[in-house]
Amino acid sequence: MKNVNLQQLFYFKIVMKCSSFSQAAEIAYTTQSTISKNISSLEEIIGEPLFIRQKKGILPTQRAIILNLELGEFYDKMDLLLNNPRQLKKEGMSVSFCQNIDFAAAVPELFEAVSRNAFFAAADITLQCRENEEVVEGVLSGDIDLGFILSDTNVANPNIKMQTVISSVPWIFYSANSPLNEKCSLSISDFAEYPIVTTKYLIAKNDYRMINMLPFTPKRIEIVETYDDIPIYLATGMYITLLRPYVYLSNDKNVRSFPLSDDYDLKQGITMIWFGNNKNPYLKKMVSIMSRRE
Image (tube, rainbow, N blue to C red; front, side, top):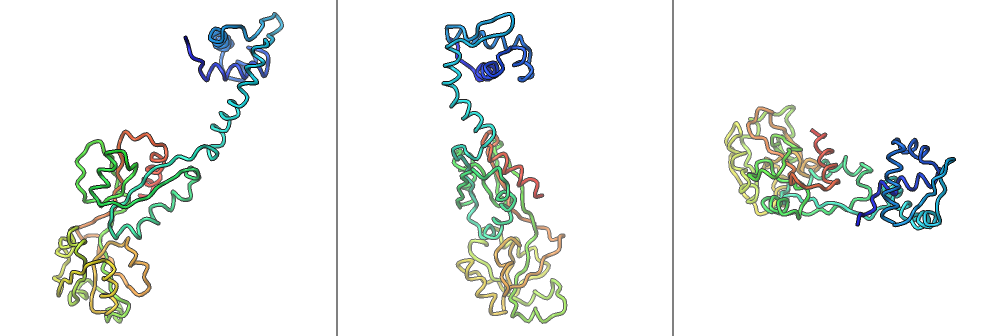
C-alpha cells in the first residue's frame, strides 16, 4: 500500500480552496496534469473519490470535506514549522572548550556574533570544558558537536574538520607598579633583567619553547602551581609573564602588556574542530559565523 506524501496533501489543500485544478496549478506553479495525477493518487490511497469532475469545474465529496477538516491542525503545524521556527521544540548543540586558561578571555570574543544571531534564539547550546585530547575524542564520538582546542594539537583523523579562529604571537605582561612603567617607551630588551613567572600547566604546553624563542635569556624562570598565582607575582613589580593576548590579564587595570613583534616565530591560537559528517544545522551555522571572523 502506498503512503500519502506531503505534496499530495499540499495540492489537495489548494484544490479545496479554489475548487479548480487549473487555478490550483497556477497557485502551485505547476501543471494541471501534475495536480490531477497527485489528486488521483491520493484518491487511490484513500479508496474513494475526493472530487466530482464536472464540465464547469469540480465539487468536493463528503469525504474530501471531512478530510480537509481533519487536516486543519496538521496544516497549522506545517505553517508554524515553515514560518515561525522559534515556536518549535528546542533543539541545540554541544560546545566544548579545552581546559586552558587562555579560553577564559577568548570565549566572549568568539561567541559575540553567535549570541546576536536570531538563528540561535531557539537553540539549546550546552557548554563544557575538557582536556584537549578529550575534546577531540568527544567530537569523534558525537558527544560534542563543536570543539575548541589549542592550534598546535595533533589531530590526525581525516574525518575531523578544522579551522583556526584566533591566532597571535604571545604578549609580555607586567605590573602597572613595575619600574618598566616609568619608561617613556619600551623595547624587548628592557624585559631581559626580569624573571618570568609561569605555571606547571603552561610549561607542559610548550611554554619553554615560547620562552626560548625570545630574543633574550630571562634572568630566571619561576614556576608556580596555578594561573591564579601569576597576578600575585606580577603585583610585586619584579616579575613578567609571557602569555597569549586572549587571557583575562589583558583586561586587568593593574597589568600592562607589551605585544611581541609579528616576526616572533611562534604563533598559537584557538582552532575549532567538528566531525565532517555532522548534519546539525546549528553546527553548520555556527561554523559559518566563526569562519567569517578571520
